[in-house]
Every structure is written in C-alpha cells, then in structure tokens.
Figure 1 (spheres, chains in turn cyan, purple):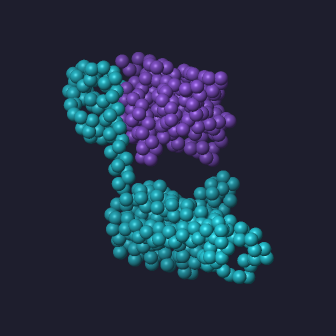
Figure 2 (cartoon, chains in turn brown, green):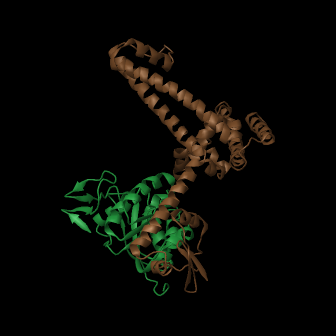
Figure 3 (cartoon, chains in turn brown, cyan):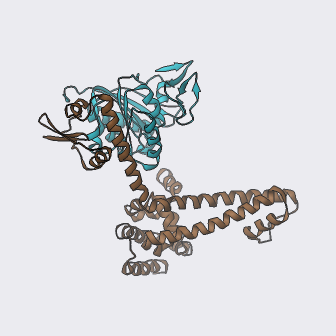
Length: 286
Length: 206
C-alpha cells in the first residue's frame, strides 16, 4: 500500500523521496490525495529517513514554506476569476447608495434649521436639484457637504454603468433577461457566479429577501414573492396579482441563464428568445 | 495558561492585530476569541510547548496567533481567500504556523502534509460541523482532545440551540468520542457552545 506525502512516497517501509524546491512541492500538493479509509498519519521522522531533512525544525521549515507558496498560488487563482472584481464593485455601489441617502437626509434636516419655515411639501424638487441649491447657496460646511454628495452621486452613476457593462460580459444571458445591474446584484447575493449557477430557481426568486424568508419559515407569515429580482421593471410593473407568477417564471429562467453563463460564457439567442416569450406570457392574463 | 491579575495573555511578539499588551504579554480577549472565552469560563485545556495542534477554520489568524505562542506547531486550515491573506501574513512572521488553504470538510486533500496532533480545535460556520470534526478525527492521537466550537445558528437557525447541542453531543458519542465537557460561551459569544471530547480509540494508529 503506497502512501504519498508531501516529502515523498512511502511503500512497505521504503521511501522514494520527492526532491524539489518549495515550488515543486506546492505543485505536488495540488496533485496528491489520500483516501481516509486507509490513512496512516505521517510521522515526520520518515522524512528524515527519506533524507529530506535533518531534524524537526528543518522539517517544519520546509513544509511551511511549501504550504505558504501553495496558499499564495491558490489565492492568486481565486482572485483571477473575473466575477471577483464585479462582486467588489456591486458591494461598493450598494454601499454608496446607502451613504448618499443617509447624507442627503442629514443635509435636508440641517438646511431646514438654517432657514426655518422651509418645507419640502408641495414643492416636488428632485433631491439632486435640491442638493445643488444647497451647495451653491448656503455657504460653509453645509454647502461643502452638499457638493460632496453631488460628487459621490456622479461617481455612483459611472460605477453603475461600469458594473452593468462588466456584468454584460461575464453574465450575458442573465443580463439579457434582467439587466446588468440586477444580474450583478443577484450574483453578489449568491456569493459568486459559480454559486449562482448552482442555485435552484426558487432560491434565486427570493435572493435578497432574507428577512421576509426567515420570518416566513419561523412565524408562518406569507412567503416572499420576490427579492432582488423585484428591481426589474418586468416585476414591479406587473399587475400586483400576477407579480408572484412573473417572479417565479423569471427566476426559473434565470437559473438556466446563470448556468449557461457559468459553463458556456456566451449568449445563447435561442434560449433567450424562448425565455423572453415565456416571461412575457406570464405577465399577461391567461 | 498565563494569567496576569485575571487577564488571559500569551507570550510572543505583539502587534499582530492591535491587541493590548500587558506587562509585555499579549492580551487574549475573550470577546474576540472563542477559545479565550472558553478559558475564562474555566473549561479550556492547558496548552503546552510540546503540543501539535490542528486548527480548522483559522480565519484571519487572530486566535491562531495566540495558540502559536503556547504550542510547538499549529496547522491552520482555512478555505476562503480573503482571510487567508491575513493568515499568511501572520504565518510568515511566526515560524510554528503551517497555513493550509483547503476546505476543512475534505481532509483527504491536506492529509499528505499533516501529522497526528494532540489537539483539534474547530471553529467553522458550516451546517455539518460535527461531520467535519469526525472526518478530521483521523488526525487525532489516541487520548488527544477535540474542542468543537459549535455555532448553533450555523447548524440550523430555526432549531433551538439546546437541541442542536444535544444532537451534536449524541452524534459525537455515537462515533466513539468521549465527551468530557460542554459549556455555553455566554456572555462572551451568543448561541455558541464548546464541546470538549477525548479520543478514546486506542491502538488504531501505530
């Protein structure tokens, strides 16, 4: 029975040492496996008998160097996957939204104190315009913050465009069904494209509706009909009584689209056409 | 273990993660580290300079760095790339940490680099924590100790934590582990229980 360890192969008490530097050992580590049924824990002294090292500290030092190198390479591989950057971008984008909303609310309150009697009721001023008025008008820190909010909003817009573009490249089928931005958010909530590709449609349907889902499981409240996919116009524009159905069909098609994206990586027109038709049909009365 | 006026510390080079230093020793905070909490609860096992440790779910290497102050060698298994970056940084500066980038649920992958250990410490956020512990028990010396930090909320959020704990205990016992103690880590960590077992299977390994 041969056992392969990092420093060599052991068989019936004899040893075939593996001679090579840390890089070669790191390569070896990704290749060798040991079945746990017949596993014999390795004894470091057999590495000495093998002639790999002289003593315990040299044994550990060699092993440690190889393991560190192995880990560094694995990390590099992981970070090379193109969905990793997209994941960070979506996260940043959503965080920026939160920050912009928080600051805008704060600035409104502040502005109201400096000019009492001001109310936003019956005025219908879009927040961006209002932020502009404050930044040019009031002077001091308040207008500076308002100007900063304006800047962050512009950066947010260009980041959103970039996210959408990259999503269109790495998830062409999902993006075609639901738009790049929402597709990227779905991927983020699933934890990566490979994870999204392994989810069933029913899970994709409620991705991002965690609170509602758990309150449903726990307290028997009504189940959520949709999570992030609600952000797509197909769902929020659908009549209320059909939304659940549209969400279900769309999510089922997205599950297929995600697999196509992950395993093929190219748009599949015949699938997309059939899927679009099916989703549109779900939105109209039977 | 080293205590200074009721504060758990470890002896080693400081500044790993901005930990406090008390008369030259590194303070081991029970609110940050579950293993430290276990010592504060009075149920930890004594670590010593001869010990070999397998640490599953090493994360950013915070607890790992303290354990490494006490023992001979620590094999630190972690699968996620981001925490691994931090763990590697710690491992480069501490000669007795062997970082292993692998999934703790698949010991066959890292078996070729591992030796028998005196202590297995497991802190992973997975639903099948007990299965993972048992799979790794092939590395445990006869008479060695397994400390399982049971994250009951990771096993099943809907289940009562007490029930999760009792299920885990019976599964461990059924597999031949002798449970010598268990304790909830309140007030340091919520819904976390430590289960301490001893490997009584003797004569299996030469």
